[in-house]
Image 1 (cartoon, rainbow, N blue to C red):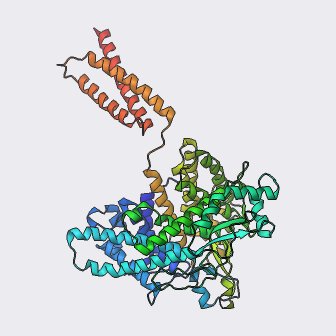
Image 2 (cartoon, rainbow, N blue to C red):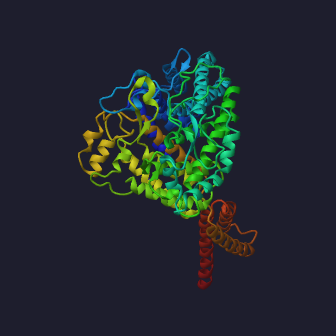
Image 3 (cartoon, rainbow, N blue to C red):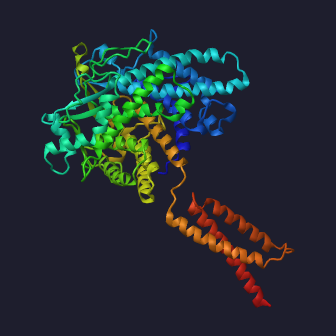
Length: 623
């Protein structure tokens, strides 16, 4: 299936409003119920494209495209103000006594027969911090755009409406940034422990002596270790040892505020929780989620639009430092050594000994995210492409799913992550986080890699894989019912396309309810596709050289024709030659950026010149 971001995003908007906007009321909640993460994802399905893609902007009714207005017509004539009302409703739902809340609640999982305490359900999680960061930045940008339009029209009372919404957005943004800073962790690992041996088993792809690998990793991470020791000053991890180079290290984000994390004293807002419970070790999934949110924070337009206040700028600097170090660390470890990359040794094994193709996909995502942040090497992208192909095959995106195939678990119910430390809260059960975004993550990172690639063959392979993944995702969208056009109808997909009796098993929580977790990630993919398509096509040196040859030949033949043309000749021959001249001027202007188009224009010009030659010869024979 061809990826068509505009059409597909508008279809999602129409389906979303049909599912959750009735009788003038916004209906929160989806497959997993209502919580601070799912409701943010639901709102971001509209707000994220509206603030990332210029042609989808909703703040100015006069400039809104007709198809955009039609898709959002259920919201009425004042679409922008209706979005503000829904946004404010969300902010008030997840704020208690002026304190923003970031609980996962219904997204949390636990073993059968065990019931978590309310205090466990209320635990803050990194996923909520990250989603809130993206939502608040999009909301602040949206409010600023509304003000820009209203200043020309001098709408009354607009500021009275927007000011309290902006205040809530800023409180939530600051709290989310604080939560992300306090959830960052640096861990030192003794290589002789079980965790250390698990890490070495991935890094040691050449069967070297363990001591040699430890020393090699230390050299590779020398700059990262130095900056972690010197520059990371806010909420240092108390039990990490960065001085001893005989220890391995990890850095990234845990699932929530880390146990014994220091409080940030310069922030003057009440936070929902000051105590941390999360284990002092990074999780691949939560590290990716945090990096995605911080990436929105570090975009140039965030500073250009002056969206942050003084406290937030200081927090943003702290997060950008952690963002850079985490990306450098995981990217270096994915490519460590002189032989086969650890990333190429699928599946990835984490420090706690868990193995999964999903973890390999996470590592691939971290590598691509690092390459996006700095100049990418075509060699790196060329080596990463077979990894994406293999993960697509192993995840049954591009290959057939078999009976009792373990790959099903990557998608439904997903990979379970134990939230280590959650069990100490009121002596409750250990909680789990289930991740089922294998296909959307593969699509998003494939599109980002394609956008980076400067090699035609590699880019073509990546875009072909992206289209195959989109086809897989389209088959998993609801085909009927209240959630038609949204995701994720996994029960029908596995039953209808692969046989078996999985529909009842995978649809117990209400098959007609959309998963905003999944749908929002598909929207992120479509936004990434729009950005990739906005870039100019790759320039082939061979095509450019051939186009220049054709241009020179056509230009020379045209000049010969003009030599034979009388100044008083106003016959169709002159008009034809003038049109050919315009084509060649156009081809010359395009030859650097679009050599294929220039080639086509030159070929047309040469054909027309040859027809003129043939007509002249034919006329001479007739005489």
